[in-house]
Image: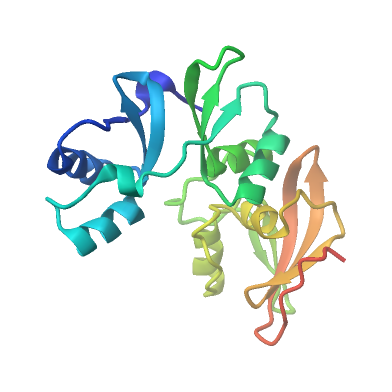
Length: 220
């Protein structure tokens, strides 16, 4: 969780050009909007909505109230597993965390939750690709914490990494659950089998490419 003091927010009453400048200077794609004081969150500004509005109305015609999204608040007591389920059910990537009195404590992202469940993510710049073990039949046994980009580089594959950073995170995202050992899935032209799991962490998987398969998220 990112503490509230570290959250970049925008005063919704600022002039349109100031809001645009702050949003475009930020490295985040979702920024909370507040009114009067930072405790009073009134919405979320998504970079995609901002760019679309600028393209349609220009900078001077931009109205943040027309593009803001509803803020989603989640209790601080929510477990990682329940939070993951809510992220997937709502198809959201971002939630504001509040205590039992409704006071803002911080924010949590889908990536934060997946990292907590699957374990520490390896540095994506580590060129050794530790945890990737190609098999003689063309498949690969891979640690769950291996970044998707590393697996793609080693195997010359094109697994998507828009919604997850690690291989285990991708399977959890697509399955919308934390699978058990032995469960199999097929999506994006690849087959996945969960080999090992420790508590709620997927520690090892088998992955093979098969462009002719149809998506199968049944886990059978």
